[in-house]
Image (cartoon, rainbow, N blue to C red):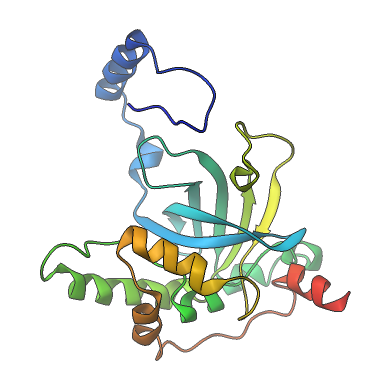
Length: 224
């Protein structure tokens, strides 16, 4: 396993590598085997809307109404685990107390603009079209979900370790909230994805109504 140059410490000792290889052959790691989707998008700090971090989500279903995701700063083997996100359906969201609902964000803008993507087999001839069909179908489900996300590691500040308290994050909800074309364009070049193509494929996805308690960070900012 390669080390991460952004994290203090030397290479993992050979003894640890041997022990962990043996453990991986004997143990089952069942929770992580349930991961079924890799999503990529951008989160912004609820206390500082506009300051953002790219996040790779590795998600699993707990039920038809609840998903949970592990967040990493990259898709590489030595990626830093930077946070967690939970996603729930509107019927569960509406059962939450008003103050709790303010901690959750919508996914409508992320889906409809093409920002939210599922990196796939863009380099495999003939595979991209089939993947786009599957990805678009997945976005029909995600667009109605509400997410609650905390980041534990402020990598955008250059922190070498996960310092301080967890930070509540939220999603972008409208044009002009950050430099979309630069951030998402840079991401697309890394993954071989295309937000403009995503946007076109999703133009017929009907956006659901967004509960007025969601996305409260932007509403607080706009009221100042």
